[in-house]
Amino acid sequence: MSAFICQPEHFQQLAIFATDQRPGQRMRIEPRYLRHPESQAWAAIATASGMDMVQNHVATFYATLLQSENVRSVNHRYNESDAAEPITVPHRAKILVNAIDILKMCDCLEYQSCETADWEQSAAFELLELIRRAAIRALPGYEKAPWDYINPARKAA
Image 1 (cartoon, rainbow, N blue to C red):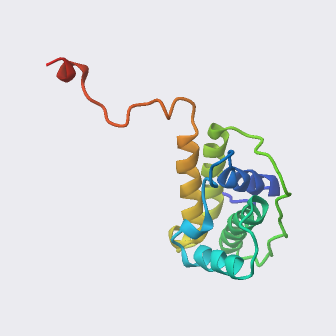
Image 2 (image 1 turned 30 degrees about the horizontal axis):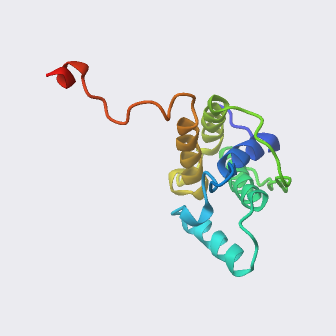
Image 3 (image 1 turned 90 degrees about the vertical axis):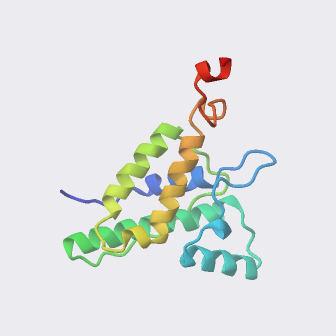
C-alpha cells in the first residue's frame, strides 16, 4: 500500500479540534496532561518561557507534531529524507469539520503515519488517540447516553 503526507489543513483541523475551547472550559486536550515526554517537555518550555497556553500556540504544536510523524513515516516507507514544511494554526482559527470527519481524519492520518516500528510509542500516536476519544465524546447524543447499561427487566424486579 502507498503512504502519503496529508495536507496542512488536515493537521490544522485535527489540532484546532483538539484545542477547541467553549466559554468557561479548558482545551479538549492540554499538552501538560499528555504522558509522552516530548509533549511534557514542550509544555514545560512554554510555561517557563512565559508563553501563554493559548489555543493557536498549542494547536500549532499539535499540528506540527502530527505532521512531523506523518513525514517521518513516509520517509521511512520510501527511504526518503524530505523535511516537514512549516505549519502554523492562525489565531482564532475555527473547526470546519464535525466529529465524524475528525474520526475519519484520524484513521487516515494513522494509516499514513504507522510505517515506523515505534509509531505506537510516539507522541503523535498518543495525541491522535486522545483526539479520537474527544471526537467520540463530541458525537451527538453521547452526553445523554447511559454510562452503565441496566437491563430494563432487572430494574422492574
